[in-house]
Image (cartoon, rainbow, N blue to C red; front, side):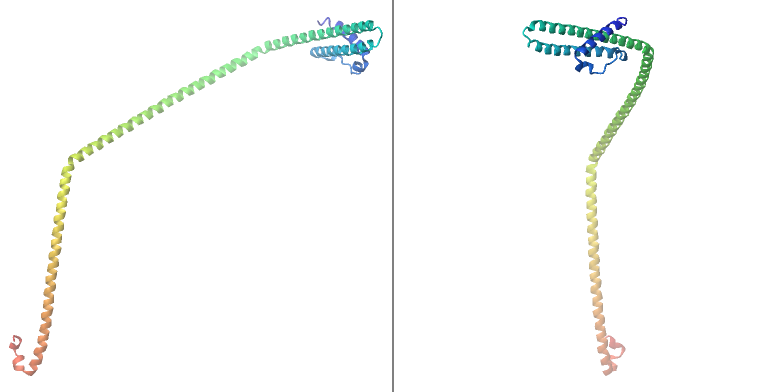
Length: 266
């Protein structure tokens, strides 16, 4: 296809020049684009764009000429000529479009070949990277597996510790319940004796209280007797004082009778 490129480029130049001369207000006014300045894909797209423009121009030109032909008395020859021009332009446009598609396919083929060549060149590097990534993934997986196994082992140990703790606590509670049951049984067995001892203690307390009350009562009676005797002595003493006072006055009147030793007995 590269050997055919000058021929179809020459044909394209002739067609474009013919088309530009036919419609100077549409195409000739545009700034020409050099195909040599474009890559294969740019050339293909330019050819397809120009083919589309040529088809549109052919339709416009045919419509314009057809309108002029109908103004003539015998339009058939004019219409045939206009139709022939349209077919020629459409054929040229189709050839351009076909060349553009072929150029695009060639570009795509070269692009695929370049990509395949690049992939082939990059394959060792990619394979090395893939191997390194695989090795890294394996190491990471091995590390994760080891960590998971360690975690599982630790969790198993923790679970065993919790199970042993629960069992020990259950055994301690059972032992405590058994000890409490033994104490309750012993208390129930000793209950009559304790009740009897308590009753005996209450009796002793009552007896002691009665004795205390008796002592208090006896002391109160003794205190009353002493107070009565004390009061009697005070009365006797006062009476003796009054007797002394009376005897002193009589002693002055009758000393021989009331002042002698025997006067105290009278």
